[in-house]
Structure formats: structure tokens, C-alpha cells
Length: 353
Image (cartoon, rainbow, N blue to C red; front, side, top):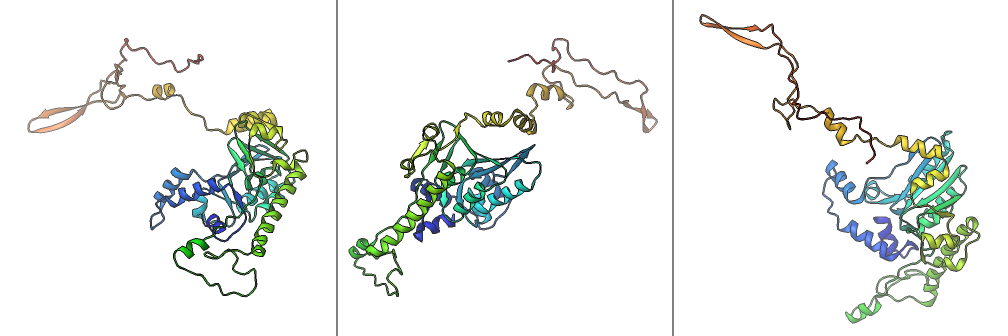
């Protein structure tokens, strides 16, 4: 993911745990991308990274997925590889707001965070949304994702989910000693004391380091300020980069409450909301019903059940001198009856298992 890699290389503030960022970048780097894009590539990406999430609408409810590593201005390939573009989320919000049938927007989070660019603006967009907003996660919503989720009117999480990581960092690798041990001396010709700060092979001055420290502190204060405007009962000491379980986050007033499942949350929102969404889920026929509807037509008996004849007239060959001619037999063949030793399948049996 270019936006995440660039943030690491350009000393940009980050809103994702280092270990999670590395795990994601390693996963992307190890994926064998073919030279040409085709349907097979899309299928492979979907198998590894999952299907690209899309907004769903049901009655007065819209569900907006916020899943994957958050970035800005992502390519289609990055989105297919688990990236979540802030621009796409904003478009979904606008769609839901324009729809007169939608009264509630549910944000479904599963994200470790990502880069900073675009996150504070999207956070403000959620905060100012004209419709009721609810944040939800049963997995993780950390750092940049937590920034977004915190701006919903209500936030519900499962007890075992992971939330928080309210902090910012910039990774800086000091390679000056490694260069010296290899016998290299890097001479950086520049204009301006701040120019070239953090360039590989050089050591930062105190003034240069303070630039990055101020950048991190400013973003962190912005992060905390946005959370406090919605979660005023929370304590700033719990917003220093710690990750919390959903249960602990609830006791620390970082979320509204605990719900075990999405169904529980939907019932909390309203029985009609839950019922509408359940009706939209695809129904699956039972295997017993499916088997009963299938009759053997291959000309052979299957498990003691005789094939059913269509009752067509048979044709017989009648020899007349040297010529053969086909004559239709007026007698129709009676359909064969299934073996009585094999009882019929009762598809109406609805006894509880």
C-alpha cells in the first residue's frame, strides 16, 4: 500500500500500531501480483484480502463498512488489497444523507488505523452528519479508526474487541553509525536548517527533532480534542496510545456500551430495523427439501427409487419386406411406482432439531 509505505519513508505522522502496519505491508509484499490484470487476479485478491466492502441499505438503516488500513486517494488495486479510502467513506455518507428513507447510519468498523491525511476531516464529517450515527465493532477499531468511530452519536463494541490506541508517532531510523562503520560519510548540501531533516545517513539536530515532535504533539492534541467533544466523561490519561478491550473501554467511558453481536445492536436500535435486515438476508433451502425436489432422470434407479417415465409413446420398428418403418405404439407405458420399501420423503416435517 503506497500511502502507508510513503508515510513510513517520509517521516509522516502515523495513526496505526507499528506491528500491525508491518504485518499488513508484509502481507501485501508477499502477494504474487501477475504482470497483467484480469478476472483471475481479482478472484485471487478476493480470496486473500476479502471482498471489497460496500454500503448496504435496509429500510431506514444504512450500514457503511470501514474496514482495512485507512488511507487517502488510494488506487483500485490498493482497495482490493484491503485498503480503505476516506474519500469512499465520505461518498457513502453523502449517499445515505441524500436518501430520504435513511434515518440511521451504522458504521461497521474493522480497522487498525492508517495514515493521518484525510482522517481528521472525515472525523469532522461524521461529527456533523445530519442523521443519527452509530459506531460498531466486534473486532478492532484502533488509532485512526478510533478517531472516526468516536465521532458517532453512539458507539457500541463487543466485549472482546480491541479499541483505543489514541496516539500518534513518526518512525525515524538513525543510520549515521551504520554509514560510519561502512566507511561512508554523507555530506548533505542544503539551504535552511530544517531542510533534509531525517535524511538517511545523517543525524538530526535538536532543532530538527523538535519539528517532528511538535508535529506529533499537534496531531495527538487534535485527536484527543475530537474525542473529548463526544466522550467528555473520558479521561485524557486513557488516551496515551493504550489499546483497550471493549469491556475496559466501556468502563473508561470511551464507548457508549457493550453489545455481544450485531443482531443485539440492531434489536437495540429497533425491532423493525432488525426484522427488515433479516428479511433481506438470502434464504437457504434445506438439503432435505433440495433432495426431495430432485428426481433421477438418468435411466437408472437411485437408492431404490425407480425413475419416473414421462409417459411418452414408444416407437417400434416393423419390418416390411426389405424396408424397416417405424410405427407408433398406441399403448402408453404406465409410470413406474417407487419401491414400497423406500418411504417417500416428507418435506413438510418441521420438527425442531
